[in-house]
Length: 293
Ligand code: KIV
Image (cartoon, rainbow, N blue to C red; front, top):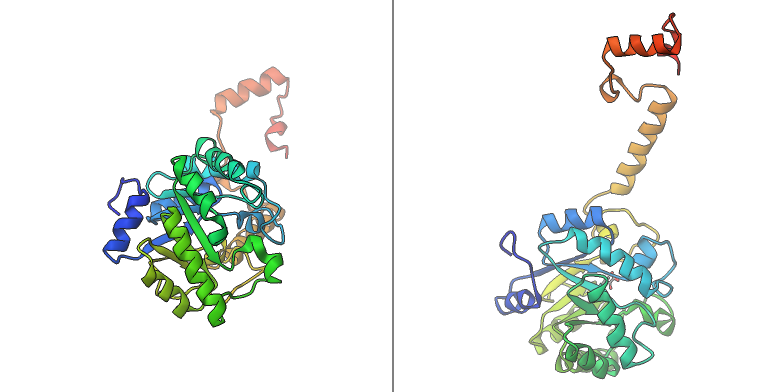
């Protein structure tokens, strides 16, 4: 993507037609979103994974629409080049199509994103149609959809049997037909994800789905080594910021305790005559206050 260009859903379609890999990464706050955008990914996803990596929940189910909007507002202030996609959290769209359209509208109007993502297969085709009809681009998400972790009975790879793989293909086709601009495929054997990609014209974005999808997405905290509670096989750690942060904080603590921080280079000075005048005004002629800790 050329510098200073804002990516759109058309960027996804163009990259797919040129067979260029699409890069997507999550971000949840202003400071890291700015770095991610500067690094030049095609899209930033404010995923409901923030429930786990930012808020410390054991799964993604408890994060609310208000909390998602709060994080999206901070990310959208930071991102100027990448396409911003906001996740619809659990129970913001499952109960009905009107809920889905209203929740999606909030993510655009209040959160500042340009597209929404929802989890689920063909049973959400009409929901996707209604959101797209409202003018909101939708990214689908199939395979291991974390909001259904209780149905799956845990974080289990999906599409491992012929029957479940063919169900995934039907889901993907139904979501494309409903108007999704792209489809996330999570934790699915790579042959199945590659097969689905070949059947669709919209781009697929894989996470734990091998190299045959149109692009890849990872959770930022996994990639940076900032979240270690769960470490799926598909995560590649590109940095160990967890250790770096721990080490930096230990150094800070030790230097405060040993009084080596702050050093002379970190303090503000005062003109000597102002200091003398100050002491005189205080009635302190010894100047001992200057040594007070
Ligand atoms: O919530 C999330 O971060 C996601 C990605 C892992 C695709 O849905």
